[in-house]
Image (tube, helix red, strand yellow):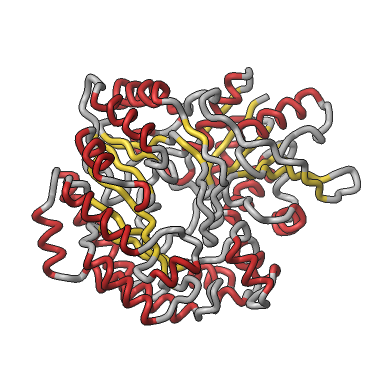
Length: 483
């Protein structure tokens, strides 16, 4: 069978540059490689990089004539996926449509099918490589769908059915992503990354073992072997001229011995490589920082979340402010830039705790700070608790992400903080950190490449645009769109 796949575009969060530039769509590239390995034909298009609207996507579907169209989504792009699926059905009535990805998360089969209004034939919950492969084989042989793990479908009486999910996949048996079908020349890492072009991303692990109640990552942690990582880095360098990689793993340094082995392998490569990653403050020490810096690591993003232990405790973060202070000092010692991911409007948040966070990130001398609002997600514990307390209903949640109707979540956050208050905290905290003359001079003084200077100017311009954007946080834009 032939499957054509894309990634649905989503709203960009205020002060968040993550979607400023298109980046490699690792999920669909990985699924494509898996399908090809079993004899299926694949076609990929990145509608985000191409800046296509649904009509342009529809014309591509006509050209490709696939049996199945697959669309990957995040929590912020499900409505856009419905529009793409609707267009695919319009131009090719016999095509089957699948929507999967992290955005499917905690939605019920009934919610997804009701809000997709017939545009989607199947939803896939969980990791898609095995489920999509099983679905293609089932459609090809007409042997029924009961055995397709993680599949949400409609039975003979049009009743939504959800199959049992498969156990979490081991990564090493999976083929490498099919880089060849991605527009690699159009990708670029967002500031402050990507300062040693050409730069790209690589996934070497999935899952997280920590119970943070605002998060929805799967618990089991699975990793790729060091040998596989070396093979991929070599291919990316030889084929695309990659000089920088961002490892997208949730907690890159979770296994210290593995991290040290990766560092040793990178140092042994016959070409120079700069890289960055994400991790927790309690999984960094001086030995790791020294080895990572020597292997070319120049930037680490940490989930700091808050400068108040009270808020961290309520988030089930299992980390303390004191440890964050120690870790940032270690990184500074070895010349590794730091990004502090911080959240506002979390549980137990007040103006006082927000001010503690503002002061804290300045005190630990973070190089960059990314503030965001704790938003509801049907997959996390914080949202389930809010619904049980009557703060909003499941219907409010569904309308907010899947529909276009009224929702309490246009006015209140998941923790009950008014949206206007949360937006004020977000804006004032971001402004407080970045609009300091001393900070701006330090950034200029620490420039490491011409692209670093371009990033500084480009990122600064987008920050100022967001600062004066009257639509503010993405949720206000979503509300306006549905009005």
